[in-house]
Amino acid sequence: MFQKFIERPVLSTVISILLVILGVLGLTKLPLERFPNIAPPSVLVSAVYPGANAETILRSVTPSLEEAINGVENMTYMTSSASNDGTLGITVYFKQGTNPDQAAVNVQNRVSQATSQLPAEVVQYGITTTKQQNSFIGAIGIYSEDTKKYDAVFVNNYAQINIIPEIKRITGVGSASVFGGIKDYSMRVWLNPGQLAAYKITPAEVTAAIQDKNLEAAPGKFGEQSQEAFEYVIKYKGKLTTPEEYQNIAIRANADGSVLRLKDVARVELGAYSYGSVNRLNGHDGITIGVVQLSGSNANEIQIAIDKLMEKLSKDFPKGIKYNQFYRTKTDLDESINQVEHTLIEAFVLVFIVVFIFLQDIRST
Image (cartoon, rainbow, N blue to C red; front, top):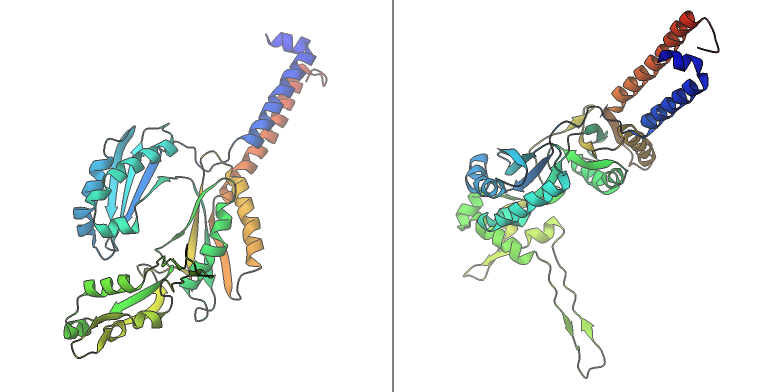
């Protein structure tokens, strides 16, 4: 058999060229990932119960969701985790080869069946169902060198508006999200227990007053389908936006004609949605953005695109805002590719030398 290849150098050359072409196509077209995709697909169900501890969540939220999700098509098992900050996460694992998109749809349908059994606060905040990705390829730290001017909440707000949407639009990026709790701007109402007791007010009454006064409405219009010459659209101020507006919310009217306002029993300020975690980079307050790769995409190309994007966006950062890509799989991928290239070159040279020694002819070799 080997004699035929020696006697027919043209056939040998054609076969060699075909193998080289296939190798080049594989090198340029196949996806690059740090680890092979052998982990089973999974779907994450997230819920928030404000003010509840882990025991309350496991007693009032988890059983209803688990009973509804259990037995979904191609499911193998699931795990649940609740924490004292009011969050719940249920991870549902499926058989290898299951379509993750279809699995997420099936789980979402099961979750919707349990909505009526959950507390109203959980339903109001919403229950999210997302396919869980296992290809975490990088983390970007955004921090402020001048904390007095730009705190972590400002950095998060800036990233949510100007950075994260740009990263999500990169081809191959599955998701980009902030780690370490929710740092979005929120109106914080700090209740004074002593004042509540003195005025005989419960937190539920304060919440009801805020919800009653702070809402969006469609007030309608005047003069529609009438004989008047003008038609007037009624404008409503809508939700409150400043701490002073919240402080003046009336909770109740007293018998003597005075009005009890929110500022009499609480302190209102514009702060973060959650203070459950602290994120520091290079000794400064900041946030961490985690980037997850879509299955089958090219991790090397994704991170090259992220590098170019961050370099471009950093030129418009407010003074004192910096970024640092402290974790990226591209370094390991580049090293692996370099090792493969060196191995190919060494193998080519060794094979050429061995064949030449045996054939003693350059043309045949």
